[in-house]
Image 1 (spheres, rainbow, N blue to C red):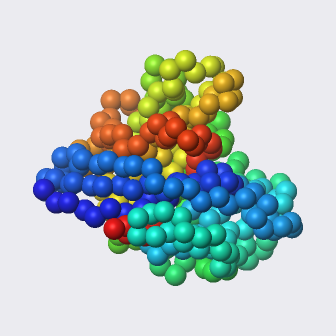
Image 2: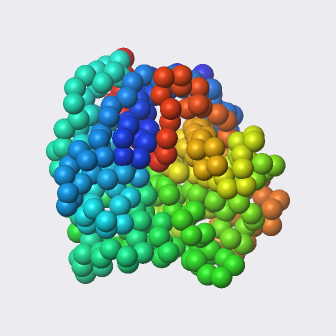
Length: 332
């Protein structure tokens, strides 16, 4: 057995709260066997919605990435109502025990530009949902009507868009579902870029129900945009007692190594105004490759997973629309 040290995991709720979790891991030598992972809640840090005034106000946080030293890049899901397509660099001071020890500080940021470095206009169909560091660049994902994964250099200069496979392109009856597609990004060692679709592609099966989850796809891309692999990730069903208006899906993925990930599943029922937020460990080991498949048959072996943390277990904090997951500093 191999024991890993504790690390901080930062989960963000849109616009208001950053929650620190400590995750301990005992990983078996056999990579195909499931590791034993446990986590506990430590602290929160509040980032007010109007922390930065108009016209470039902070807005809602839809993605976050950390450098392991208490600095984080966060991207807003604002579609232009309160400013341009912006991201911010924030310092969140935590001590060695993962407790908040001071006020967050704005240390930088930029504006995400389109091809030819043309500003993206409000109403042009973008909605940024994820951000990750990629060497000296940043990768962002937009889940609007015309979804894309974009690589930019600070402070947001356009480098290139990574082409999505044909099966993912939104069309009638196929491709990414509107606002249920590119919610997540992860960067593994070696520069592998991964995303798990929030719900299944339209041709791959139905959305989650009370009886069953949805067959999302893990798509892995190389830095040049070529496809490295695809796997099926099966979400949990809707929370028991959910209404017909409820939804659930993958809102973020965080790379542990080349094969293993932490996955944030977010469910919401507007009829009850209740959230169902869970973090799972999953791996491509033991799962069927579905690379290049135009549609799933339904018999593919999905990625194995197990529950790491259920945010509904928090007694003094009501989790809201949690959308981000990032590594924090190494803890004592």
